Amino acid sequence: MCSEAKPLDCHRFSMLSRYFMDNGYEVNHILHSNEIVPHAVLEKEMIDEYVGKGKLSEVDQMFGEYTEDMQRVDVYRLKNKEIGYKPGEEYENQE
Image (cartoon, rainbow, N blue to C red; front, side, top):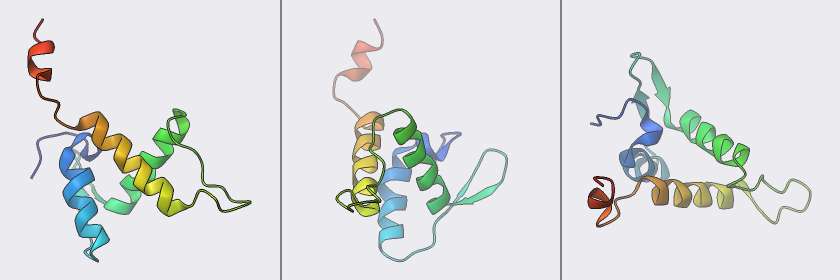
């Protein structure tokens, strides 16, 4: 379904796969190495990556003000902003 070597670099990961997961479907990704990885594993990897880069806060374990659900929503927002299509961008990259 996707030509990206890494599912995390594909817009289908953060749009379609997320939709299916949220609606109770089991989603697996086939990596370039033919390894099959569950979506939840890659989602956790994405969250850890953004936390490590300081772009996403860790879950607030003490007071519960920033929950795992909130973190998940935020990480997808950040990922979609990063990989989403931006009109005119194809012309900017040609210079």
